[in-house]
Image 1 (cartoon, rainbow, N blue to C red):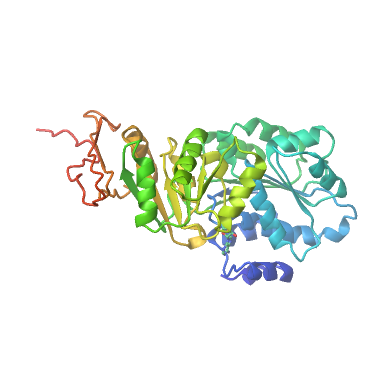
Image 2 (tube, helix red, strand yellow):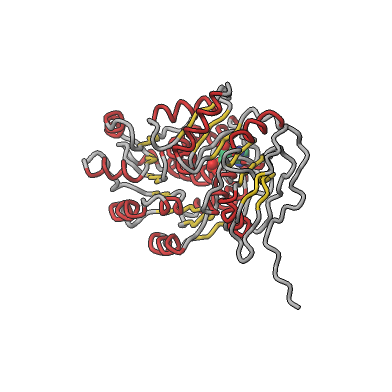
Length: 418
Ligand code: AMP
């Protein structure tokens, strides 16, 4: 299928062409015609599938059709998304696709001064992209009028839930017109999201592009067993031997992210961290430098990295394994985007072995173990369970890549039934 088969107008086709998009992604192929039919949509898709364009393109096209009718600029589309980074990215996408349309898009999020956002709102806009807290704040102060809303997009609904925004989301749903077109996107469909979607969607069409918690096929995944203390050595070792010159590194905690950066910088390797304790401008700077490749390594926590879209990101490194399997799927989804190849390397210490088991269960595959590395750790699973037991570090740090881990036992052997 071609974009022109989706009956897109010339200015949008031109913008897509200029962005280098050749053909629609599966979610775009499926969702765009449904949205044009003015139907509500329940989209089960993770980031990296092209879901932003799947909702932005038809909304922009429909807004541009009826634009002449509205003299004053009123908010006619609202996109609600959980993080500032994601909000900024969605805004960039809307701006890209509406380059040749008379449509004004605005993004608002917390952690920055309100005045520029108030001024921009006063000028009048068509599309508002917002995080829930700042939207409610400015709404309560009377700067936002949602009476003319026609389109409501709830993006990353499952993450809204994880981040504790669901009450704000419900408040927002109560202040927008009931007569509207609603599009809800979520990577996973926990029961609370199913409940919410049955409440806010009217006879929705369902579009699902990847089954729940499956990992993108094009991503080459691997896991390295390594002690907590050796992770930093393994990281620098891999950067060198695998010639990794650009990678997004995940840390479970903010403090951990800072420690990784400090250690890398001590070794003369460029790195910066993004997490909730960093100022918005520091986060934006780090992200910009990483995107234009002047920064080699970006170290992020799950929340800060949510939805980050970096063109051609080839490597994701899980310095720590997440304790929630869905976070693993989201993390590795930063690479291998829009059909490109990608690599996801995970470090696993003895305490994280149980997380690995949960992740593998969730993605329904075993992640290949790389045993052949100088910091190889032997993990002895407990006899009666899947959790990690005592770790024995082989302490073979001679730089030799021969494995001392031949007897590694991935899972506890099932008991023999005699
Ligand atoms: P998303 O899932 O919306 O975060 O999109 C992931 C990435 O895919 C972004 O960099 C988009 O610009 C890109 N993208 C979206 N649609 C297409 C397409 N049809 N062809 C090529 N790239 C696309």
